[in-house]
Image (cartoon, rainbow, N blue to C red; front, side, top):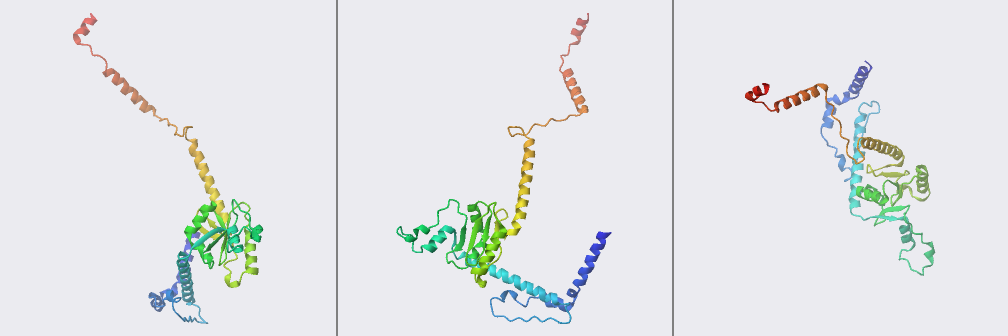
Length: 291
């Protein structure tokens, strides 16, 4: 009864909210696309949205149009970023190499007095820089799926991204990763050293190497937990599967269970076969034998 009442209530609510759409004038207004919202960014456009200040019945039409405009804008910017990215050279280098290029733009000389400032070589670098050849608007490189997969393969799995408009810092994930520490660091750098128009985000991002997706770092623990549970289930399934196999890895032959009725039938058939195969004694010889 409760479920039926809930469904009826939902239908009544939907009918009341969608009632304005049943008005003939509104259907005519939305039947054809005459606004060309997708061309607003390509040419100079002035658009006025006028709504009633006494009746908000049709305000949802303006809200839908504004939502469409923002969605089209996001799609357009994404396409432009991918187009520009395809024409640029993506670079992925260690932080040490980047610092060396900044300190010695003309190359390193053996007699350079700044030689002692060279950062030590690292066998397993802990920090990388993702950029392009122009060193400008480099954050667009995180939109390239192939680049993200290559980095994941190089670093051996998931990795962290500290975002900036002109460069992105990439860190391999380790057990000591502290999301709040890195978020505070990004926010401090943005506040003290980055101009407001060049701040990309105050958040830390992570690349999920399994789902091949860039997400906020605070969503990663949940995904890691689900991944661990899936691996646990897989191990238990493998353990159960191994339990039904011999040491050679072959399945144990299962004994066929035969009913008593079938066994009796087999015995009768075997007896009849033996009886038919016996040697038949000729009648004359049989009489002689009886004498």
